[in-house]
Amino acid sequence: MTLNIVVCIKRVPATGGTIVLTADQQEIETRYLGFTISPHEECAVEEAVRIVESQGGSAAVLTLGPAAAEEQLRDAMAIGIERAILLETDGADWDPVATAAAIVDAIRADGAAGQTPDLLLFGNEAADTGDYQVPVRVAAALDLPCVNGVKGLEIRDGHAIARREAAGGGWEVYEVSLPAVIAVKEGINLPRYPSVPGRLRARKKEIQRVLPERQPGGSTKLRLRLPEERGTTAEVLGTGPEAAPAVVEMFQRIGVVSR
Image (cartoon, rainbow, N blue to C red; front, side, top):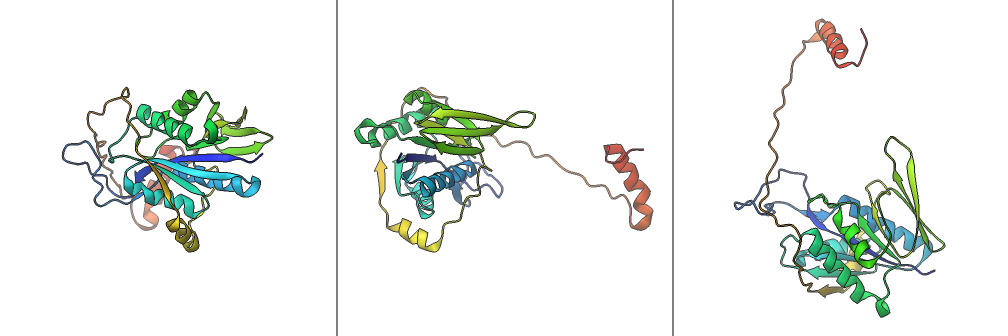
């Protein structure tokens, strides 16, 4: 079976520094932020490349975002994804309803003779909004089985065997027929870094651009709000050997050692 895989990713701010909002509290101030792919979705890209390397087939990467999201698409192609589709917007956030609808339309239009890809890979949730809706909405619209929270994936005999961690330890194992939607979590693999030759090859590849129509019906954002900063305190227990009794008392108090 020759697999046709589509990986859906999202361009998100690299949040290693302090987050600042715009004056109208509608957006994150991105003038001093870099951008990247959501960590879960980096793993989805890596998983697609590994499946194609081991079993053959082809993989495409798709994102909905501004023209600048081309950078993230090329990063995915630099590690082995063959082609890319950009659902180009003006950069404004799209709610999960509109996002899922645009992805579904693009997948239907992209498939040869209306064929759905054998495997649609997503990250479990986006790093910025933290919602889990898009993979589930896409699966429902395409009438496909969906497993999320996946940290182990095997494709065998026209089926996907997906593993996810169970509450209290252990694993839940699901077997679904292809085509299917799988949303993976960080830790399913260790994503590789794009090589210089890979980046050069990706730079020469053409990106398919589509102007999606935004569908109404989702939630409406009122404003963004940063969480309140919590202060921290430090207590000096002493210096030298004289501090030992205070350290032991503290360990007893927090339960590290017994009395």
